[in-house]
Length: 284
Image 1 (tube, rainbow, N blue to C red):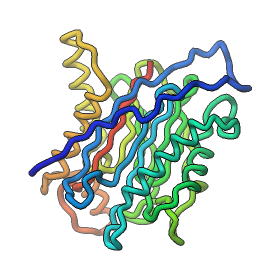
Image 2: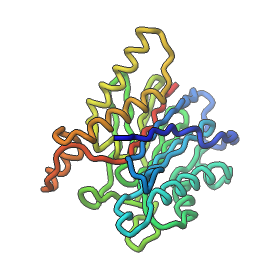
Image 3: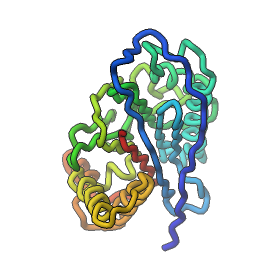
Image 4: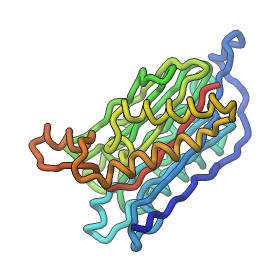
């Protein structure tokens, strides 16, 4: 089996904007240091896969999207929709339009709404956007991509998924039955220095339980602490992608996807072969 690995480089280096009303100078500004890894499933017809993501380091925003694969039955590459949606998110952030800011921070709901309006290709996609402002992690999430926050090696928060039914997530698109940005959940989580944020598509979330993700991260952190080596968030992202890949090809393993299938009355054992995108952010 030939697997193509791809690193997701920093898609945007953008200038900071002035702080508007709502800024408290007494609150220490935390920041995210992010790294990512992407592994498209082996498909010669769609070598880029159907996932997409971005990292805007200066404005402290990251995002992931997962093009809905069932469009392939109609000859449409939903990966094109996901990639254009994420590019349009970056373009909206880079525009520095004051309307995209609320209380001194980026208004992710407006960013998603504007990106959605500018995405014209066929297909559909989930979307998860995260931004850090002060000690608050803000999120807009639609579908079954999502994020989690780890503190001292334990998951203390996981975003809820949105599905119409089993394996049918909420999805943005230009077709009649697509969901709209107004359906996205707006979430806010208090974070601390030392926390780790993991944003991912369902390639990870369908194939790895929380305890497996915790174990993989803690193993990597422990190994580097013993050697006093500096750890890059991209290394943890790569480890999580490899964990998900291993589980995806195990036909007998109990996975979140197989458990959900059982609850829905479906017959499925093992993992789910899919594109896998992981963005890991250290809160400093």
